[in-house]
Amino acid sequence: MTPTRVLVLNSGSSSVKYQLIDMADRSRLAVGLAERIGEETSALHHEPLAGGGGKRERHGRLADHDAALEAIAEELAADGMGLDSPELAVIGHRVVHGGLKLTVPTLVDDAMLKEIERLIPVAPLHNPANVTGIRTAQRLRPDLPQVAVFDTAFHSAMPEHAARYAIDVETADAHRVRRYGFHGTSHAYVSRKAAELLGKDPSEVNLIVLHLGNGASASAVRGGRCEDTSMGLTPLEGLVMGTRSGDIDPAVVFHLGRVAGMSMDEVDELLNKRSGLLGLCGDNDMRQIRRRMAEGDAAARLAFDIYIHRLKKYIGAYYAVLGTVDAVVFTAGVGENSAPVREAAVAGLEELGLAVDGELNAAGGKEARLISPSYARVKVAVVPTDEELEIAEQSYALVASR
Image (tube, rainbow, N blue to C red; front, side, top):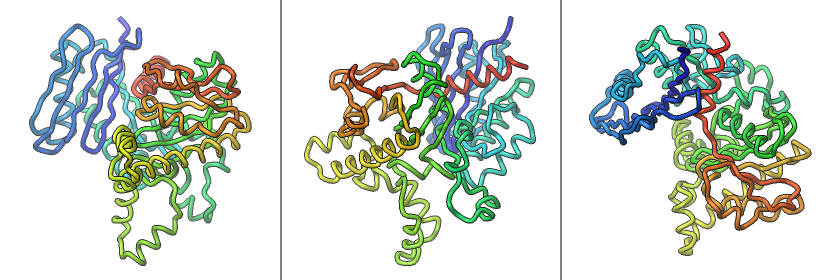
């Protein structure tokens, strides 16, 4: 029997998200989340999706990622789907930053792990946790192939004129300063599914993909390859996000240091954790912001307007970059679920061939769908993202090809 199951792990600094997927039919067998790792209030939420049984929870301290993954393995084993199962083909890991060297799904080895560690200075919140998750999984199943899939990989195709910042080249190269982009696994999956929705091959379409969650990014995709993306050296650049500022004048950093006496760490925290929608109005949940707007809250209205203004700027910029656009595609939590955001982002862009149909836009659904009227020259689509399935697909394909 050929093993067809993939365990997908997404290790954060204090959490591990996981899904067990059977690639024979792309079905989910189990999903779960270990959170608040290292705290007394740690919790593991586990849900078997095959063979019956409901959601289960564990509460109590998970000291580290080793303990969390051992607990996950125990829960899977209780459902007959443990890490020792002969049906498990590979463990696929989400790794945030692969730099310029790690641009394709890669079998884990010592050299690859050293490169991920070398990139920690440009991904200090993510890469250490990703490495920890990989090493723990190796310890639990040293005989099983492990594959790393990189958030930056899809954007590695960007041309140099889009990836380079206009700073001294020697300084930039010495310190790896360039636009890398993030959410690449989502952009890759969504751009491919959007092409399917349009009935075309990915090589035949130009797309503007808007991944709108608490973190948010835009990409210009030409013929299945990234032409430009809004996030840069870090996930801070670009769109207004839940707690991140997105684009600002770089001199703001110097100004806050000189005038406000803020340290580099304080400015870092401000721009990453106390800015964006949260900084503007005290809420980073778009649902709450919309509720407050309906009640006449001026701060919520301004935050929404700033958010939409930035979105429109990127739609227009990427339209210019691509020259012709087949579709604008919304995805992720806000992009998939907030009809008002989609309507506002496209409003006033009729001269660019963009429009949404009010009834189609308001209708919910979990499937990829068009929300533009039939006459629109440029389609507007909602395509649910599935980063875990994309990681499983890439990991399984690599192992199957060996």
